[in-house]
Length: 294
Image 1 (cartoon, rainbow, N blue to C red):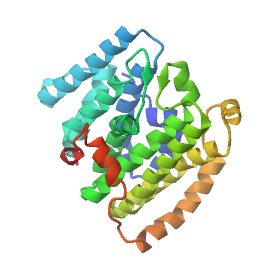
Image 2 (image 1 turned 180 degrees about the vertical axis):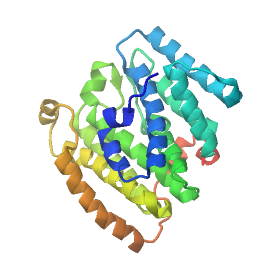
Image 3 (image 1 turned 90 degrees about the horizontal axis):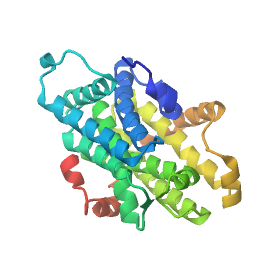
Image 4 (image 1 turned 30 degrees about the horizontal axis):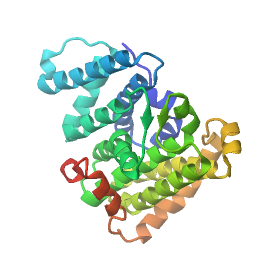
């Protein structure tokens, strides 16, 4: 049985923030991330399209299987069955709606094409909700969040992080015939500006996260946002291409963690604001009913 800690291996920024979570919550967060990572690997591995579609269909079948089976009927698993079983157990334990998990799988399915070319902000926002806003929403449930404003903020933080990923991975995505945004620095800047709007919208909603979980989310938000700021410092496409994959090193993580203490203090001085990204949520709702998910 595969017992790798995917969170520690592949998501060092999130794993760093996870250090500030209680052990049980960290373990459950790791199970959610492992499921997400396996889906990502299906889309990103260098194999033929038919094989990818077959593997994703297999994951859908596992989801259907474990939603419909009682745990007492299960005796043994292969690796992916165990990963899916773990995430289905999470959805039941934390009252996460099945449709949110299905949205995530649909987002990955949208990557299984010979060529991806997005032409509108709507496409970008819907995609970012499906592959990352869903994760923010599920993670918020693991953190015992039930306030609707806070759940909208969790979606916003997931979208912000995905937009940051898209801005960081333009060259890598282009090699895979994926063009979420046009591959020029002006569009990278515009994408990061949009991401910043979602980062800002997510901030005050952290008030509604239980105290013992707040700092971890503040740290994750600040470290991931720093990736975008480092990208903007490249100033042009030539420097961006030369830089390779941009990440936040351990020294920078320590600094951002320290600054996060001020954010924690600031949250208690800040009134809970009305949802700032309502316009963008309306755009997403043309394809996905967010109210049904929240």
